[in-house]
Image (tube, rainbow, N blue to C red; front, top):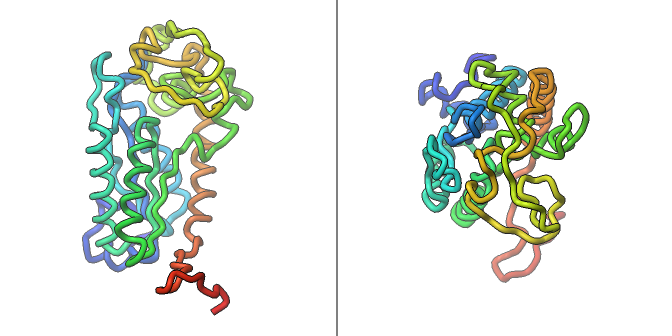
Length: 278
């Protein structure tokens, strides 16, 4: 593969097969879903694609970037309209099948780069199924990495952001879209949605620390217009800041991930612990 052109879809199968074992392959995971009255339904797909492309441009021939999977698991947004969703069970199977294909192509280091919160649980289930199937035979390293979690405090209230954390169609996502795709943003419609009152345990928009209690509600029950957080606080300058750190944190992670050892079974056939020095 030519340096600087590490796009999976642009390569022939012979070239992909030759390079697979030595490359990290990235599969961006997006969604097509309502993002309040002010953002395009492609927001999650747009952002995660550009974050992945930013990393690909910096890392040259060390990675291979797959096309973004544009559809996610978004049934909780369906009542607002505009959403195209795969059920959690089907989404899990889609991820299993796509990763299995990459493993058959020879890849052993696979990053599922996530851009939508609703994808996280079904992708983790897919990782469990893939581990059950391939750990003993191929020992691959397959991970889920969500771009805003990789970046840490940058997406959790650090200056210049004014709201506590990334949620949905919020200050963070709106700022990113103002920087990356300003033509898809209608700031005159960006207003704080009507929200339920706090119960002290389950933050409705990631604005309270997790305290061991989880609840799941359809979006229409926790947001009057489909958005979360404080989208009216968004600016393109904040978006540029967020994007820069999202790409940098992804590059740092990928450089580390490319060196991770492939884990071996530490127990012998009799169920006893192996001597790791042997």
